[in-house]
Image (cartoon, rainbow, N blue to C red):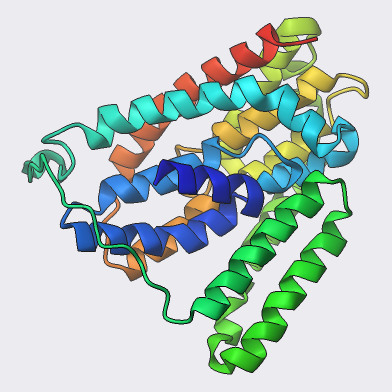
Length: 318
């Protein structure tokens, strides 16, 4: 399950992972006869913390592509140690807070519904194997094109176009206008407008003072700034605001900011699009999310993952 999350997160991006895997994980929990919350938390935490390797793994990575000035393989190599540290920290916190025996069915202070064992579900058999194979090939082709350095827009258009054509002829009823996330687009646009408005009233000067140090201290400050701003306003406008105050040529500071905006958004419900998308799926499936517990466990996980990944980035600097 973790491997599926990691692969989808890096090749499809974290928001797609939240959309596609949350229903799969919840259905898997139902078939296995286990509590759904541990699998739901595994999906949303790894969707955020496992998005450091490739430009397509996170929208913040795409925003940083020009400034980072690293080809996909070079970026993956530079962030590999930080990614391993973030995943290890996330796995440890998942076990501590959600996966320990007897805690998997925890329902808050009202008590436990202890669960020590679960049965693995039967192997999934797709209803339409042809569509399943075509979709898998399209995802693989997209990953290969991105790693080869092909333009992202062209790669996306080719692979998405192939899937759309096949689905139109094979399963024309599979598409609907409700699949277009209009509310989320409006929400994200509003967040950027809010940050721009605040910036005109001194946000840029404040952030410049917070992230203005050089060397290792600057990398640490940039990562902390990215994580804090992400949980306050959302990681996309947080990255844009942080990037604006990092001088050109400070590559490690920019990578630190990326780590902060990717690994840090685990506390508030609006910290990343992945959390928003994930919550909508959980709510539709009837999974109750207790935000105080979400925020508390997410804060601990964010701090541990952030410290570990930034330390790994600094220690592996060329």
